[in-house]
Image (cartoon, rainbow, N blue to C red; front, side):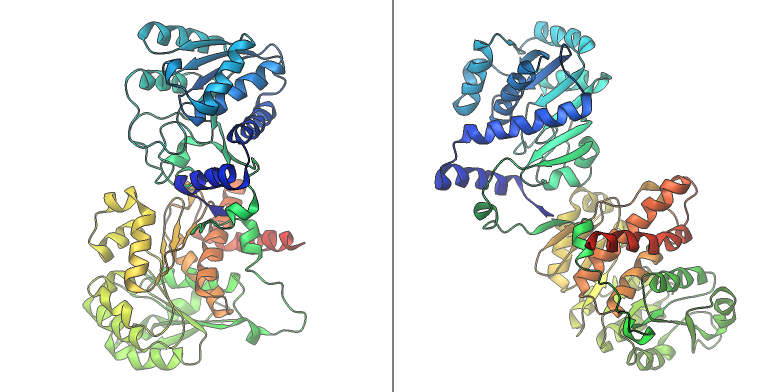
Length: 519
């Protein structure tokens, strides 16, 4: 599903009005009808129930006035609080304000402490609160009387519906600088906005509903939306059904270069995940002195001992062996559990430059690359990097805090600078391509915050690469299914105590769920 910026949505609205000739008040009416429909779904029959509507002075307020009218028409007791003077309301919003006043819906300008106290009293007796203070173009921080209003809304126990976006969320970045309406449901129009999908904005959104308000397709198709929300439909278009006539040779050979003393579990998880993602053959290249450990843990993957001189970790002596093994593979993952020694840094550089198959770099491979990030530009093959925020900080020299403030920007910048696909892990994992496109992943849960889940993700992505998926498809499908497997596992076991192996067990079920969408 395409995701828009507030500026793009504004442009679509303007062109629908000026080029196509749809009056703005018609779009406002369509929006209001969708919001009321969703309120009824959540709250039920509104006859004789009390609705408090908050309206600002812009178009979001105009939507709120229209919502108030329709709620009134279906029998709700409606009270509208306006967070500005009525004289400041213009254009289509003013038309809708005058309409509700003519049908005797009570409106209150909430511009002093007296009105704030009245608002607080009315909240105690209402059944639903509708937020139409600020729209998707809001930037900055809520202050003054409106800040008090938001505090009272959030401290109430009432059901809250936000029109287009919770007031206080930056629609472009998801930033929340102060207090913000915390909604149970948000009805946004035409396309989801970036700020509704990423932290912290998504924490205030509640259930997100995308409502079509009648923007003609000819208008939206002309807008270059570079951000995509990965969904089941998107992933079902990537994952093919299997041919009846096939063998393991049809589904790729992948190599996972992994392991050091005390870190053998990473490679085992990665290899098992690659197999569960559908790989035909999975080879695990490990330090030869640790081979027996892997042999006792693994049955299906093929363990390849790599010369380590008995040290328990890989080094430059392994380069030629690894390159030779890579020549007969379709994709390779490098990094899980290989340690952070200087020898690994030297090894990584050689492998990145010499590789002739797509690569996934994770964990210690990224820590090694951080000492000479420019080596990524020397790769002749597609490279996917999968850093968590700490690894991203080491790769870029930017603090974790600053990376987390604008994950999309930093992922996009890194991909463009080094010609790689960046999978910036975390809540709402971000995938960035070298040409600036962004994918946002909605799946996953806090139970996945446990050791080894990153190794599982690397295995899934590598498995898909080995099956011939394009790099960005492998990354998008891998991240979505990784999170979906985690969600399936959490639904069965809860988030506490979830372990990486649970994701591997549920991965076939996640893939099967997607395949059933093909219809």
